[in-house]
Image 1 (tube, rainbow, N blue to C red):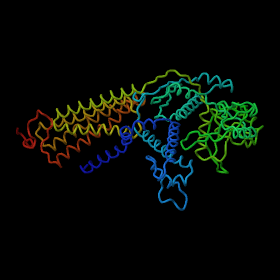
Image 2 (tube, helix red, strand yellow; image 1 turned 135 degrees about the vertical axis):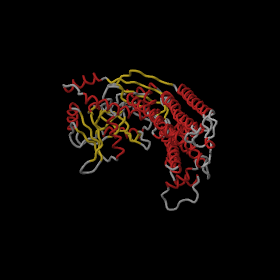
Image 3 (cartoon, one colour; image 1 turned 60 degrees about the vertical axis):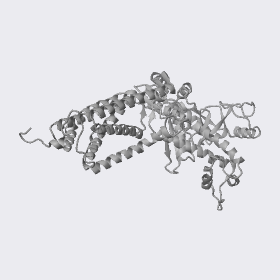
Image 4 (cartoon, rainbow, N blue to C red; image 1 turned 180 degrees about the vertical axis):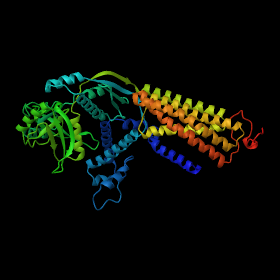
Length: 586
């Protein structure tokens, strides 16, 4: 391949890798620590921060006369986009914004600005290299599934035992429920995976509250179906207008007795806001009697009606739940059915006909609302009861010390290897130095591209890769020395060195890659992280040693016109002066 084409390939690879690694560089080196803390918080924390800051800025805006207060200049562009009139003001200053837009609209524009800024940083963090539990600190929990208890319960209800396939399906549903629950933390790519036949490993990086996280992971879910009581709802609404400070207790009871019938409860209706979080809408009174609980739900899907084309959520019930629900819906056709999870009303559709084992909830759903309702039904309760086998919490300070030690080991090993190459192989060692630096750059870029989680074993894989990568350069340089002793020219020495060393390098790297692939498939946790980083390093080191290093030698020979090849302190002859060996001569 021509040098120009090889040079273009190397530039393209460097450019693409820069696109991959740029989120990591921007996140760890250019985002202030306080903004990183905000972006790594939960969505609820981000929403609360945006609202609190918007209220403070709104007070500053109200106090301003003409010019926008410092830091609120963005309101000018936001107001221009939101304005719908035909005669916009000449200058969008504080007075014009307050005159045209009501208070709530201005507060929403400010809140959206801060929320979008932090959510953008959150997406940047998610696209960068993640730090594992041993580097960032956090919590790891091993959960044991009570498969025997599940089988006993099923046998008591249906008269038969669960098959292996049915138990596997229920365990996978448990994994799905846990993923949905952990999402509420807004965490950095938590690890939730199956471990063996009946265990689940949960790893949550970052400084969190262990007991709070464990309680939410282990919570039962609390999904129930109740009838909406419209008369009690109207009574409470009228009472609330006269007494705006009254708030129902968490269990649905009121702090004041005698307002609504004793057989009713009051819960809030919540819809998803633009953060994807629950936001209060109104209160509804429901009957205390539970029509059905979520433990009978089996499969949940979002579908579309063939005739009307409306989106809906369908779910199936087990045999016992089907009988209960058929009797309940037959007696209450035409009434609203409140779906309550964790003491919040998620939806209250109308019962249009008696329902048994296959239920469809329809209404004026958009795609997001339908998916949210389906997620609510899926995460109702854990299909398999879980018990905590082990729990380990690592503080962020210990993780910071581990990062520092790992970086010192990585940089120290790299520095010693490069110094050795420069001293022992003279100017040829410069090529090895450039190849090694690019090798580390390529490896981190690939990790960033796949949002890989960096752990201490991964750093060990990097360090091992440095030694393996320089080994390829050593093989090439030693072959060059042998060819140089024969009195060959610079170009002939370079060609022979790379050609004769090629298969020796490939053999050693292929065997190492095979071992790494087996480790990545059979190993878990730290072993898998080590194997993945080692595999990436193998491909990167082969590319830099055989492709980049060769291009540097050819560039120096053909473009810079270098005549001598200094690859050793012990070979004194000048290849260009000696020429080629003559037949029968010395």
